[in-house]
Amino acid sequence: MAACGGGGDSSTPATTTTPPTATTTNSAPTVSTAVGNQAASVGFDFSLDLSGTFSDADNDTLTITADFGADAKGLSLNGTEISGRPNSTGTITVTCTATDPDNASVSDTFAIDVTVDQSAIAATFNGAIDLENLEDYANQTVPNYITKINDGGNPITNAGATLGRVLFYDTSLSTDGTISCATCHVQSLGFSDPGIVSTGVEGGQTGRHSMRLINTMFAEEENFFWDERAPSHEAQESQPIQDHNEMGFSGENGRPDLDTLIAQMEATEYYEELFRFIYLDPEITEERIQEALAQFTKSIQSLDSRYDEGRAQVNNNNTPFPNFTANENAGKALFMQGPNNGGAGCNGCHRAPEFDIRPGSDHNGVFAVAGSTTEFDLTNTRSPTLRDMVGPGGSSNGPFMHDGSLATIRAVIDHYDAIQEPTSEPPLSEWRATIDNRLFPGGNPQRLNLTEAEKDQLEAFLLTLTGSSIYTDSKLSDPF
Ligand code: HEC
Ligand code: HEC
Image (cartoon, rainbow, N blue to C red; front, top):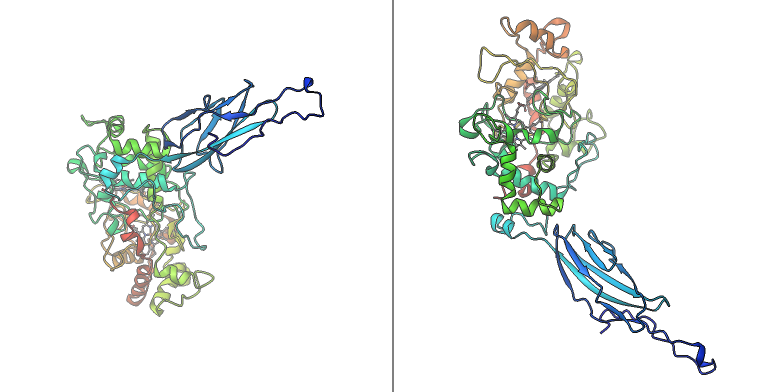
């Protein structure tokens, strides 16, 4: 009956040399009903009553303890009950021991197998999402020369990023069921959109060009969007859902609001399973949506370019890279050097090796509202990383700038080579007052006077910043 093989002391018979009158014989506790193996599920309350497991012939009061091995997975013993909400899958081997006041004891060992309920996930994603076998988002290789690492206090977890992936690709997060984040952030295009502006629900148009969502974690600037209006990555993430023109849950003009969406998601079984798995309860909140989406976008990491191959072989960025052509190395030097040293000054704001925007940069002279000749927008001081401006096959991930006005890399270089002022008021005075003064030396718009050959070199260098894995990596792809 002692299934656990624990074996306490058996009772010690009195020896004949001692007078039998003074001795009472203690009976050790025994296992009366061995506990069989138990099944539990992540995020669901588990409880097991041990009060009938042990007995004691002397009716001694038994003290029960439990050993859960290395990982109790959130379970604990309270009195005679093992309870809690398991927080991960796997087997817990539990040894329960009953001890009487004479220190005689007996143990019972059994297993609690914790699995995850993912039947709706299995039916919806057909194997693309498996909570028992998560993709690795958290431990991607980051070379040691990447030093700007900013997880915003919300580090990537494999489970959180998996939920983020589902949210990112789910068109049911839009009011007309046709738009997801991926509509305007297309994996094969470096998570950008080829349109000058993007089209959201019911034909709504965004006010600005979409941004490539690459290496957002490897950047110092903490404010998001071209105009930096979102104070953090997390704060940014639920805004597109609530944007009237993007995903539509604005609560305006008869459209439902975020609470309506959350209620709809709570009635969706695969979200119930996903949120329960990650948060151990199925409650859906804006904050949880933000966290998960931000973890997914932070895991879009492009660090396998020819630039990275070269950078890994030298001690600093200014050394010529062994894997570069002479033109690419010349272009790198132009990028790095300031205009006073014959360079193009790009690194002053788009800093190698992350190529993130320098915090505190002002606007770069591009002043239009997308598609308009009469409206102006001088608020754009953030840029995506300059990595992955083209795809691995050389096709453009542009157009570029907040207004999508520069179709090619060459057009970008021409812009900085000879920055054009607005031709009239407004916005000329305001433009002059707000352009970054590095691009307005001595009160005049920058003239780099690059030769055609130098422009070719700068362009050749910018093309080396393109990686390959993010374009096809299945963990970043549509799971539906
Ligand atoms: C209808 C098109 C559209 C949809 C849908 C959309 N975005 Fe965007 N996204 C944009 C545009 C346009 C911008 C730039 C807007 C601006 O700066 O004003 C942008 C900017 C961003 C940024 C800022 C990047 C940076 O470096 O500052 C992030 C992050 C982002 N989107 C994530 C998402 C997520 C997550 C979703 C889904 C919840 C989403 N987007 C849905 C068009 C879209
Ligand atoms: C003074 C700071 C500054 C300097 C110097 C600078 N930039 Fe920029 N850059 C910006 C800002 C700010 C933006 C975003 C502006 C916008 O979209 O209106 C930007 C945007 C860009 C973009 C668009 C990115 C995209 O995803 O659409 C490219 C490409 C670019 N810069 C390349 C360069 C190159 C090449 C150089 C050197 C010739 C350079 N920049 C010099 C500040 C700077």
